[in-house]
Image (cartoon, rainbow, N blue to C red):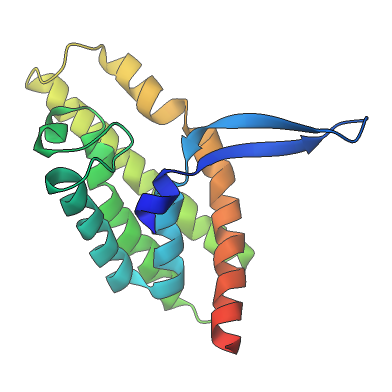
Length: 175
């Protein structure tokens, strides 16, 4: 699911006055939202297993990460965000299991908290990498590129992920 979501670009479709559609591309894929969706629907343990599996697949088998893959990806600034999938997935799943009658607002809050955990993990990795001289880019530029620019579209996708997870949960319970 995460691998498929990583290939799906995100966009906003807006109707125009002449009834045509305008597409605005967002600065994010559904990669993060894929893991949060799994965690909301299936819980903390499944989300944790999926995020660890995704990490292993990307490091040792297939280039499934946004910037590729392989063991060398550990040395890139983006790897801290990939590591952040693990605590983010567990947190999102744990929070969704904790309350039985969750609604759209609850799920949106859970996904936003999980997204914040993911970004804190990524920024922490950037600091560590900068301290040990892992990359030559300016730390502020790295935070801007990896957190601040994609964050608005990721927050927008959190609402969509929450809505989609509620609909899928209702569909799965009825069948």
